[in-house]
Length: 118
Length: 108
Image 1 (cartoon, rainbow over the protein chains, first blue to last red):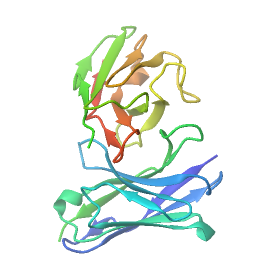
Image 2: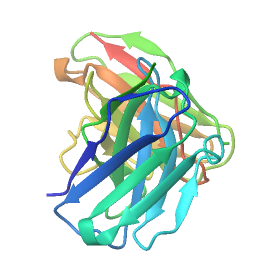
Image 3: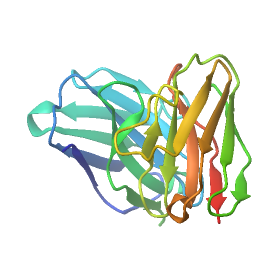
Image 4: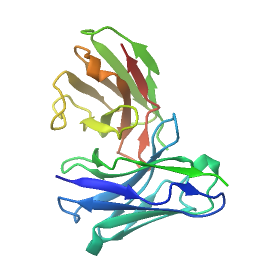
């Protein structure tokens, strides 16, 4: 059973860096793309980007200048860093994995709310 | 970016009703579309992948189905149940960045 769990600070000050980690248990860590998605309170879903298990990354152009996604296969973890945050980055952040047979996201963490406020 | 436009934004129906949601892509995405159900405070749950009714995710009830290709897609609940109250999203994964529809809130 594949399980994902986000961890990291729930409160970040404006202009600082948001850092989250997703820990993966069960299933294979290799072969797949590992993804970050966010959802501002009461709003829709926004794809942030993903990292292949070998380390190559793809980012949403709207966030690319501020985002870094990295992977640590030895720990079965992948991470998100977003710098220069503002109140607009307040959201529930989800980590996710595609299914074994499509690019639909079959596995999700429970989500973690990150609030940007001084 | 590919814009995904869902319709309607919200709907209210009765138990047992047939409910249909549409999703229109701003350009051709072949069949590379998924449908998700999201209940309040929870992560989205994958229901259908690669657009088609035959691609029902494991564990998803058979009353959920999908169809379409190119730019026009539909999602149907054949007989609405109380536990189907949720927000439903379409998502394309043909072209980066992946993009989601704005969501359709289904109420009873």
